[in-house]
Amino acid sequence: MTTAVVVGNPRRRSRTYDAAVHVVVELTGAPPDLALDLADFGPRLLEPDDPEVSNAVKAVTGHDLVVFASPTYKASYTGLLKVFLDRFAPSALAGVTAVPLMLGGHWRHGLAAELLLKPVLVEIGATVPTRGLFLLDSEPTGETLDAWLAAARGQVTASTRAR
Image (tube, rainbow, N blue to C red; front, side):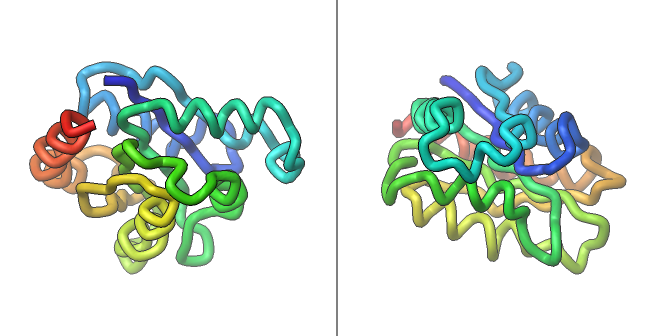
């Protein structure tokens, strides 16, 4: 199984990045094969013909499992991640199992991954067999993640095997 993380935090190598990598390790026992920190692309994400960004989009579609991660900004995922996801054609993620992951400062944003990020991933063809995962910035590991993993491991395994 090949794995990737796509991180939409404007800060490079952020807690969001670390959490996304950690989720892949916990789900699969290995680090991701591809780790895209969208902050590395900067304004090139807005250039429709940028070859590196286009290659990154193609690379994501070739993985079995992808964790799409964002901090919570204004009760939603970042524009950085949105601009990247807008590059995917309808059904581009067909056959990809995706995990929506968001980090935030307060539990009142706890449904953001489920209600805002998950539908976009499904719209571009991904299979999302789990609940969206929301973690507090201050607690990216611990009981919440452990409880989510207990349910998600089997769902992710079944989904990636089906591919």
